[in-house]
Image (cartoon, rainbow, N blue to C red; front, side, top):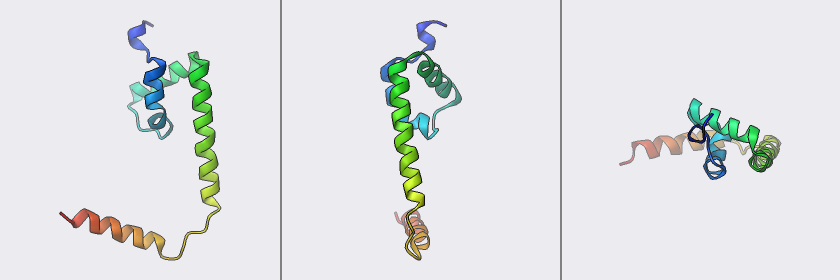
Length: 84
């Protein structure tokens, strides 16, 4: 594989959030994964960000949602979509 077919650390760093979501194209996902397999510094950053996201998700699951919140959010979204 040539350098043209690889992402740099900077390119991976700028894509990590989208990689974790995952919101990248299949090709970008592949290139990020390949870089993470080769670069310990970027892999360490990826592991850190993954742990933070997992911890936040775990904590959010324990929080009770106020009654009617989902309905209010949906109503606000509908209003925003119909307003000019």
